[in-house]
Length: 275
Image 1 (cartoon, helix red, strand yellow):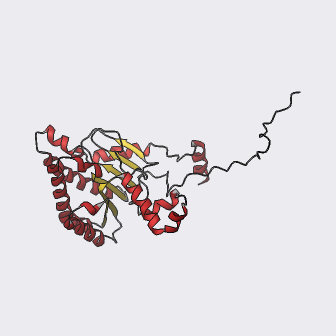
Image 2 (cartoon, helix red, strand yellow):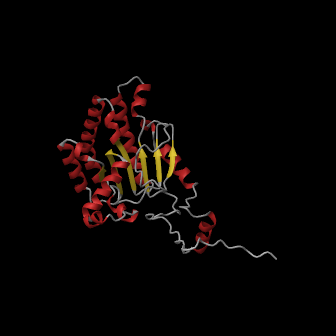
Image 3 (cartoon, helix red, strand yellow):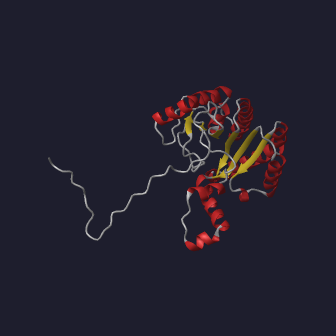
């Protein structure tokens, strides 16, 4: 009988015990929900919607605001707790100066007109992004809107304005080291659990469902950290045409997904049986 041959380390080198693999850090994952707790949307296609109708681009952006109102109402009715929308990304600043100016004017008008309505309906309003580039009037309205709605719990509506996922991770790292200068001086490693509380969206659970309208199938530097285990849903509909039926279609797709978070289907079945 041939005996098993065990590999031996070279002379002078001690065999080391390999560390046990630990699951990666995750935040409040819940794979048994029929309705996503948090939906994040890239609202793409306003300009193309207007172009198809031979209208100025601003007409598409104005129609897009109406789609925002309808989506917020539908989210509340369906029991979604958090809704995060991209108003404009940090990369949108590369657009023609006149369009950027129009976007700023629309954002200012929305802050002046919509925040009180949100408050009346029990909706909390938040903004994430590098707001230092905004005019003082916009920054003041953001601060006032967040303060006015701070105690509302029906829905948390977050607007990503001048936001980028890479910016978010970088600013979180800077914030951590400002809070822990001794870690920076010692060259200590920065792990995920230490960084996460400093991210711009740290007050919300990570998105369960990501929606992008307009036909593009990419994340485009949006919530790069937070979308690690998010279900993705893309539609060719342009944002001004996104309605309650489209949202419900995305929610139906979400309900068909098996969310394993690195586990096997068998493990999920075992958990379900023990519940």
